Amino acid sequence: MKKTLLFSFFFILILGNTQAQEVKIPSHWPDTFYSGDQGKMHVQGMALDKKNGFIYLSFTDRLVKMDLSGQMVGSVSGFIGHLGDLDFNDADGKIYGSLEYKNDAIGKGIKKTLGKEENAGVNGFYIAIFDGAKIVNTNMNAETEDLLRTVYLSEVVQDYEAEVNVGDKIMPHRYACSGIDGLTFAPSIGSSNLDKKYLYVAYGIYGDIDRDDNDHQVILKYDVTNWAKYEKQLSQDNLHTSGPKKPLEKYFVKTGNTRYGIQNLAYDSHTGNLFAAVYKGTKTQFPNYDLFVIDGHKKPVSTRIISDRHKIKGKTLSLLQAGSKDLDTGIRGWHFKWGATGIQPLGDGLFYISHNEKNDEGLQHTTLYKYRWVGDSQNAFVRDN
Image 1: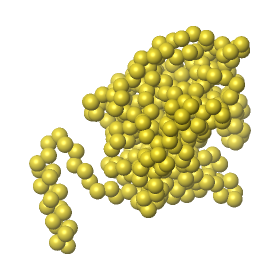
Image 2 (image 1 turned 180 degrees about the vertical axis):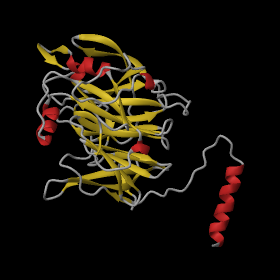
Image 3 (image 1 turned 90 degrees about the horizontal axis):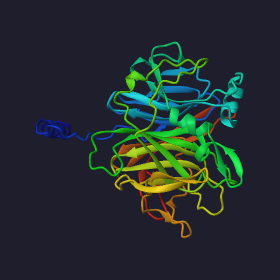
Image 4 (image 1 turned 120 degrees about the vertical axis):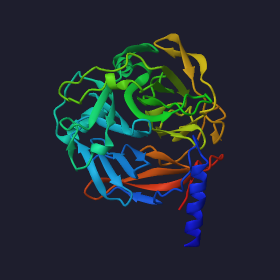
């Protein structure tokens, strides 16, 4: 009792003497967190509402909201596209997710699983913006209930639908763009101003081994401050095109070949870096790591990227000079099994990392485990519990 009173007094004392500084409150997040069985499609990412104590999980065709005891609070269903990675925007209290509509192998697979007809020729890539306070029941409809708005990303659609010269062939998809998946809110990379956060959205990148223009990750940067003018209610039979014409910036990160690009992108304020979890690639000339860390302290570097047989102006981001280093390419990263279905910083070097599985009936679930960032030459993380 005396210790509790002493801590409370100390906390009040700190609070009374702190103006703009954020007071660090001890973590109350459970050591492990179980989602329970969901649908037939696997978990894609997570977002944490740290203020109110909610965990949001994307299971491809649904968003799940749970409290810290593991109880379901609500869910949003009815998606016939691909709901991917998530992040929570502290500035407006909304949950942001990547949302795809396309007719490639992924899109066709989703429609087949859901028993839906293909809608050939219609592609749409969006940021889905959920009002978590309105998610209070299970199976709330993504289209008809007033809890979701979407913003169209024309830059992604243009790159996805483009045809380019690769070697002696005309191939679809500039930069092998397959759409979008990983996203996160973070300060300007290389800037000392940590207060203003931007939305960073990573391309999915097709893993074809017979093309050489898919060895960079592509990340778009947006300022979402005035996005209310673009936001539209979702209509999956009539996809809208309301959104910014261009991103603020378009960045490239040399990682080598991956399968479907950055699956989960997460900014960690403790280190100031961005963590990028992927499905590792198969090109033998690359180390094919599962995890890369983008150095958030180094300014983007102007360079030229080869695309469509031309050298175009671009900006590259730097990988953190840590982890295993491939001597032939200089690429650094880690072989780490988990993270592509969810990686979320908790602060003080701790992370939630998703271990996804399915039961005998084919229903998907995940367990979030606490890991501690190590970042040495052998280990990215170690289990904290």
